[in-house]
View (cartoon, rainbow, N blue to C red):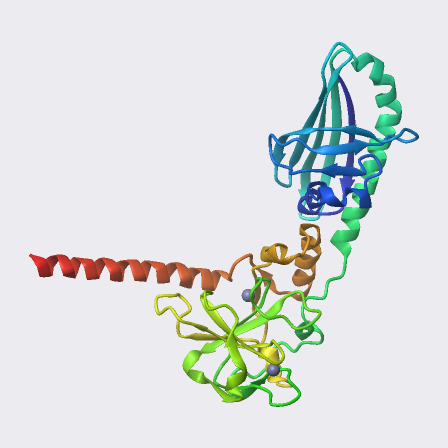
Length: 345
Ligand SMILES: [Zn+2]
Ligand SMILES: [Zn+2]
């Protein structure tokens, strides 16, 4: 067996490098050696690809995925059968050296009758091309990890503490007959949200979302312009039919852990200072609504820079409340069925 071994240190999180390796459709943007590769990176799947060593025409090959360990290892093999054949195993291994630095070990091993004939080429040109591939991957990953991201306009010169209590009006974006929602009390749990359902202002990657006790809100103008975005969702978001802005979100199911809360977007209160942003949630959900996983490191870095804690669901405080709510529901259910049992006997 002969092996071409290369390695490089990249100033980017392993997840960013992985996202580049795993985004086959975008190889043409950075990878001169493998300019085309298509298929699904799942163990057992066979991909369709071209390999193009410097000065040689692109050569089609069909690697089969052998190993996928997310953000750590991608391994495929290619087999050319017969007495002039060979078997090649291509490995990308990522070892995190810290949260923003990763070592890439990139190798290819050859076995079979043609190995000794191939070896001088692979040991020279092949090795140089793989080293160039590493450099191109490093450049792309480091650029992505450093990229500037616009999270939400509320963060541009935001004040840390605004008035939380008092009366305020949320106003939609319509020039005429805007919907007005009166809020009579403190806005709580203000956070940035990456979910696919919260309304976001133009140009914002994240939504700014908060809650108020639902009895403290009332629609005071142009109620008839509101309609529910998705009646099947747990939080029924009422949007203005004129401008599309979500004005208020209410929970219909009395057993739901958020029943009794009204969800709102505090920036709709205009010049009143937004309350302090306590945390950012559902960040990985950005991927389901179109943000590439390779951009997530920059998003997380931008949030960390603002001092806002990042969670991939809710904040620990709310996760604890939700877990406890589940226990309360189950014990209430158990008490009810025990009462039914004793009523029967
Ligand atoms: Zn409107
Ligand atoms: Zn959301």
